[in-house]
Length: 453
Image (tube, rainbow, N blue to C red; front, side):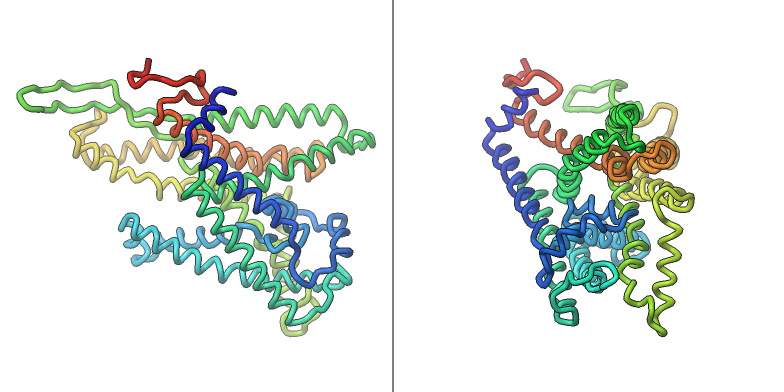
């Protein structure tokens, strides 16, 4: 393991990528503590003691604490994720976007451009609503120096610029760094909150808090280890479909059929995307309910607040409707994202093109139906596992009285994202090492010869 890490810094290109990625994450970490212009820093210090719970904890978790500090990065990367969800859903229903998605790299760039434009609109709207929330004297009296349209516009501009800067940094990591930039940013934000969660757990234990005893701490740690092991198994789990290669003629030689190849179908093809997408959607009712508080006493628009208040009350973590909706969203996005990234029809056509078949199934429609049936089954297993892990903190909080801030970091959405992104990043690093004839993390770190000896 130590030798494998050392090998990363022996390869100039890989070393530059890793250092570049860490530098970008360091810049974003500093930006979390830059408050929106017009905020009183003295009043801001008391925000952590009055921070609303529920999904706001998850929002603050995804932003790495920037939401708590009313930072220009408070909205984090979630508006970009929301825009990505909308564009991917529209790709299925819009013939124009569907045609773009089939044009390869050129179409992908065009869709990404539309996603950026939509991100600006979503961020500007959410930042505008956030300014009303900061101005609300019932929540934070004296937090804003000069409430009014000047502050609202400044808040909207600064937060929109902050989110677009984060999005740009994520794209730079994807292009010039290592791993997926957007996922790594969320990963870094979650990991940044771990020391505080551990410290709070220690404080609970030192105070002999009844809701968090040493036995519960051990149970929480054991559950975390089991969940991590399960996520690793699901992430690497595959259904290997045997492939029989047809006879090929090369020159004067004919090569016989080979049966030692297979088509790997991942149990969790979608990775951590379904959990991130589902969490982004679940944040919206609570988000709008808190930001629409100024409309509560309005005669004309009071019904807007009442609607979001009712919807938010129905979707609080731990409640039945929240759990059912969260599980349903994860399962839906597992199937949806798998359908986007893996097309059984295209695979069947490629197998036929190269003269390969699945034993017992003819070319074309039967091969496609067989692959589709297998994919539906293994995707269901992966989706159910992800959903079970995602709602685990709510169950621990309800039945074991584990503090919510600790439960949210040691299980559920956060741990799925952390483990999933870590595995994907390690795989990319290993690919770089093996291309340059170095062993990866799963074997001894030594330079191999070209022959693999």
